Length: 337
Ligand SMILES: Nc1ncnc2c1ncn2[C@@H]1O[C@H](COP(=O)(O)OP(=O)(O)OP(=O)(O)O)[C@@H](O)[C@H]1O
Ligand SMILES: [Mg+2]
Image (cartoon, rainbow, N blue to C red; front, side):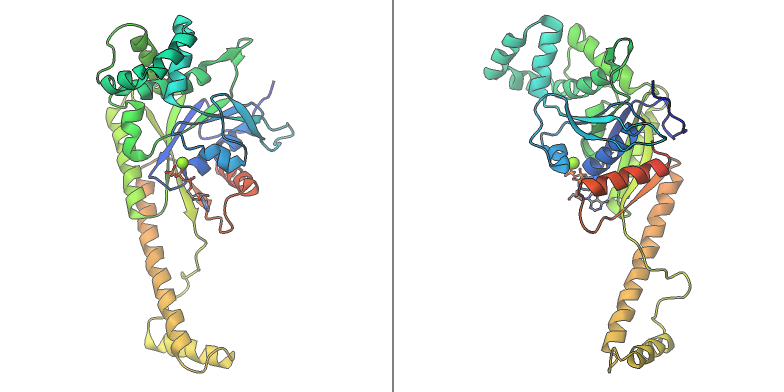
């Protein structure tokens, strides 16, 4: 048996839902987090639900079928080997067929129904149905056991963006148009029990910019508003953090005397004859100072939300597998896994 020797911020959590504004790095961060979690030695499942094959692209493997596939192995840590990272791309239609088979032994009928377009019809009259099937798959993976112990140490769900997450997770528990009784109802209730247990948290990926920060704060507030018995907010993960110039020692070169000094320095170094370069540099520095002030303000807002906060650097050369492992390591060092 693998025994973890470290405390993390999310001990006891087995379902990590990752959301955030579009394009902030949800898929990348979900993958890095999944790798970090797998480094404890147990297998971890990384799931995506948006028909985008983002995971396959990230791990440079062929498009994922509706079947759990091993895409990577986590690095060894604490003297034990890393666990396997499995990935799954869930789509509502396959999830429905699987559901029908599980509950009614109706795989063939399920296929026929989807061919006839019954599925589209069903999701039109019951808009929550598709989401229940997707979140249901995540809940099933969390609960799945083999020989009495859980198959996965953790499940990481690359979820829809903040704008759609409330509805997707059914935060306010109004199952609009969904059956009020019967197996779908029971299924929806089981899913909600998993999502509303201390085993589940929702992490928010953001950049240090106004819009994604606002969406993060709103998202956390929405979860907290539902309160007891609701879905727990998790960490704030600030992604693509740029290395910044250390401007703390002095004010940027906006003062004429500072500008003169800069000009003289550039001249002495043989880098410029006229003042143009110095003026350009001064403008850049002033710009940098402004950006840093804005980012500091956004950071303060995020800190005030009271959730654990992690930072991941901007990887200027692009995200490849090696970069993903480095991001995973960074998340571990910060206590995320
Ligand atoms: N820390 C980082 N450093 C550099 N590039 C990054 C970083 N994180 C993500 N990216 C890049 O930013 C782009 C968007 O990332 P990603 O696809 O993970 O975002 P997303 O939130 O899942 O987007 P979508 O909303 O479209 O699903 C990708 O090209 C990815 O490689
Ligand atoms: Mg994505």
